[in-house]
Image 1 (cartoon, rainbow, N blue to C red):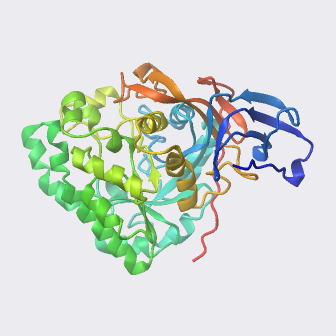
Image 2: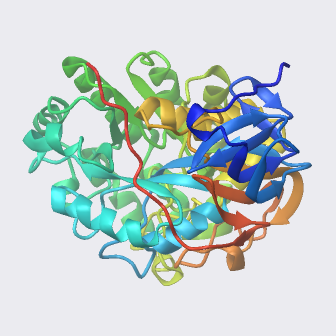
Length: 456
């Protein structure tokens, strides 16, 4: 494959802030044995640069693969209001240790992220302590629906997130009239948690009577997810709104969504790809409790088929930590959620090692895909003029995930003791090395992501 060379005119001095030499770089052309130079946080040269360029800092990437920085487009960092479980500093520290260079954070904090001031408070907090780049969702609600055209275009806003189930107060949007109002105000792709709230309430007695976490996926059954997904896709079609369906967990949804790809994009999570019922509940109990739930093997296989046939656009972690004390409450009083941002890439690299997907497909799901469908400026590929967000991995490194490695304030992972092949070694955010040789370095210097203007 012909090597790419070139320099941007504004950086033609042959001197860079950072040089990455000798790695196998995953570019839009595929895997290339080229070097990378960055200055001012931007990629300024690609090609055979050794001896031709000098730099303040050099990383020897021999034996490593250099990926575009991983973007986790679904995390819950719990700040403000629930920071005993997690906060932006600890969550983003875990992110970069796991090779993630950017995140989208969800609005179900306390207070909820519904208005300008709520978003600005998060942006102010992140500016001081985020280890990587960031954006925050505004929650779509009956109380702010008519303002969403404006709110979704605020700087640092990742878009609008709607909870059709599994939420509370003003953030729960389970009524068709409310959903239509939200959908008709705004143009950006709307992210949705699709579970049918009425059906969940009706079926909750199943687990209230048994107290058995192994029935979590029976309470929140396939119908509860499939019914809500069908409903929101139909409602979005009325207004012509583009949708992003989060954490798809069923074969039924995957087959249905494959028929609606012109306007609907699809996320799956590492835990739905890596665990299955009933084994995970028997082994982990409420530590495997998530919404929507981990399901039987046939559903996991359908998610993998969705990756292979292109139905799936994005891998998001749905990082949603709770303390061990909270998770060990008697079920169903135990909250749903687990850590995930730090283990997203290691788990997917292990799936790569086991032959479930290609490296190019992994890059599309974790970097190019999020940048493309959400319109993130300057992210998602290794190319001239793009941000120097880089994740350097050793595809042959063997590690064992353990609770001690997890940076989250919650301090645990459901993958404790799991042997992994493939591991992040260095993490670079806009040309700044924040993890070197698996160790955190420097100070938090994350910035808000910018988004391309939506043209209807």
